[in-house]
Length: 178
Length: 110
Image 1 (cartoon, each protein chain N blue to C red):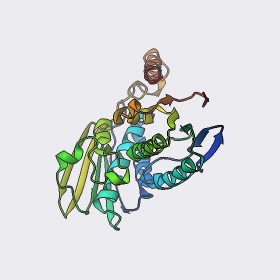
Image 2 (image 1 turned 90 degrees about the vertical axis):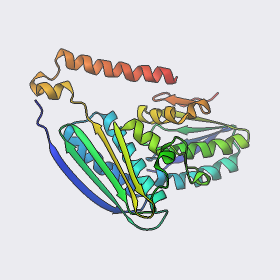
Image 3 (image 1 turned 180 degrees about the vertical axis):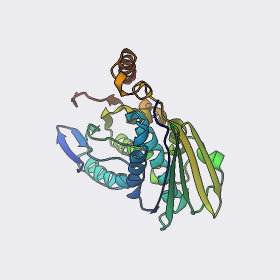
Image 4 (image 1 turned 180 degrees about the horizontal axis):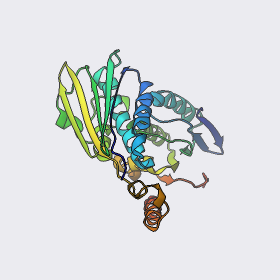
């Protein structure tokens, strides 16, 4: 069996858009201990990027403030909290709708929450006008068969089948696109 | 890493060499709009071979350029997109407007 980690980290950074890359890379590095797939890492990075962008662009609207990022690992589940003390969201349900944006003149797509919700297992938003916004999201990282059985079994049939299947899935998606 | 572009016949190809997020789109927009308006190309191709990451800011970038290119009577195509970025394209509904090709095909001209 894999050792279940329980771990936590916190970072605070200024609301500058070049910190988006820092935030998502920091989370990716932190969750590496769960041995996630490349796809799982990419999903989480994208969701973090969306949440941090929301805080910087919408929460602080170009003003300087602090964005707080907390990342916890409980067993094989990642919990991420991103909060700001910016202007808050008036109506969270409306903000979550695909294509909704308050800044359409600036070529925003309004896809932020939609992307977070589809890439993470669970997304919750708490927001109070004038106080700030907190986004809490979580995702379970699949324990892959090589981890579960220990490294000595790595390369056994099931493992290889898993790999093959994941390849096939990728190709199918590719074919659909073409 | 820097995004470069080249022009061939009436095609304008942008080889994007950075992660596309809120931070990087500002420069990309400016550069692309300048070049598109200067060359008035028949077709614009965004080559995503070296784009490892894109979030929703990239969708805004593409929709904005699509509108501009459409206005001057050109077409936009996105090439060599990785699986993760394809998922975002699928979600956004952009595929109905813009042809997006999966990695790893050579960028070809009509």
